[in-house]
Image (cartoon, rainbow, N blue to C red):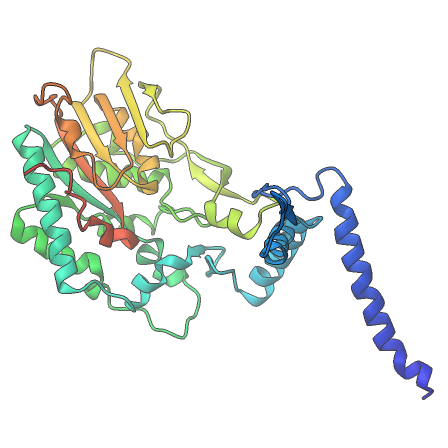
Length: 370
């Protein structure tokens, strides 16, 4: 073999490397080729007459998010990882049968970072204080923990080096007896969701959260726990659309949407948004029943996280007025008029929180004065 032929592979590799660098750099000049979720400005080498000491790192970080056709390449790489190697990324776990899981729930699933007894006690005490405060203001109180998806679908998780923890040793399983001791009312929806999943999906395959059917089961359980059974929530949802894009899917495939099934709510157009309805992720959402013939309670106050978004239509459909609030510590002071300090007349207070966030209950009662 001649010396020239020996050098050919190295020459071709170098040529390909420079071609790709030039292609993805010059491609940024094409309209739409460098679109990115983070559309920050190009870092400046010189600012206020001084050369930036961090420009190289800043530019590298910016370029990694803006080079031409980035999202297309991420999509293609994600297809390879999901379909061939069965792996996701630093936020997504690829499970069985098309299921995706939020990697942040892995510690709960394996039991690798359990809450201490002191933490559990502090969380239970906070819920007790919130419950007592609600009852002092004439409102029923129900705590609802939204289970992690792998709590309900452990069989869909991928094979892992760590074994799944015993469900009886989970943070939630250890917290509920402490609530019993303190007399705090709660709805444990885990057995209900596990039973229902044999007949229909109760969580989205490609999203962190429960679907409308899982939310129906949870909403009914809360109202049952509060002693407010309503027939409109009894029947399982049956109509299905295929137009839901999951949050986990978006993390894997930023460019090309992949849609998931969603159950259609059949409870009618019974309420309207008074404020905050432009996005279900808004901090404060108020709803009002459209008719004088309210099916259920007069007023409800629901403290929620992202799982609570799917609960909004249910509680809004059975409340004369409903308020859905996202804030920690919980705005339990909303039970009083801010000017007079008088009770505003709320009938039901619901505290909903995701299983992976149970530690956030600690100190969540901080707004209770005294």
